[in-house]
Length: 261
Image (cartoon, rainbow, N blue to C red; front, top):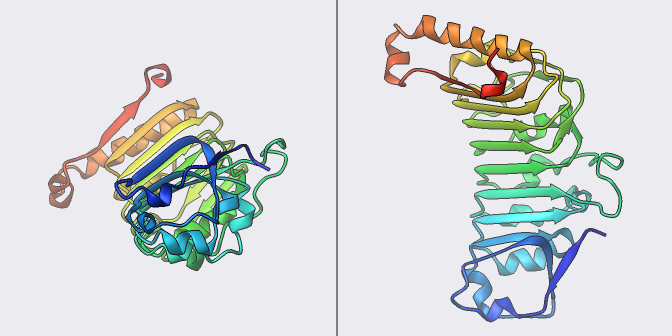
């Protein structure tokens, strides 16, 4: 059981309500009804206990959804794919009173179980193995991916093209034990911004990412990762004279003051 807060008021009768947001995970009674559910556009944070086909059938116009709890209950569920208008999804893994690192999430829902038009996805504390990134790579509409608080774990991450992450433009990795990251020449074809924070043991940033990258922002990373970031900057400077780079406005490397060595 995760930490939850029960909402006893019938929000489904609040016709003017468009966005409902709380810091704690909330539960909503399945017995309450009201026509206002169709007006709701934002709901965060919803407990996994309430993630049912019935609830999402009543909220077809959700654009922004946050879920907190035991995400394993969503692995085989088809309820999320009903949200055709959902653009932003935030998933926080919480198995209180257990510790998430001791009970890591074993897998993600299959790509066809995610909302079909999802553009922004954030994962926190899921402790997934990096091999499961291939699942997210098949989300064709995904433009922004944020991985926080050990969303993925493991020393090695091998990124391959294979038609994955074709639309991704922004990638954030914050807090991970990743040490070795390799990438093929055709991975992340449209990635414009890469943000790395608290990746203290990452040896280096793949040089191959420079092809499309416009912004590289690093903070609390290793000396060797900083050195690889400067190599990417040098590669970008070598390409500045080319017309297609000039049109895109160049490249920006942001290094946190404590990392400038």
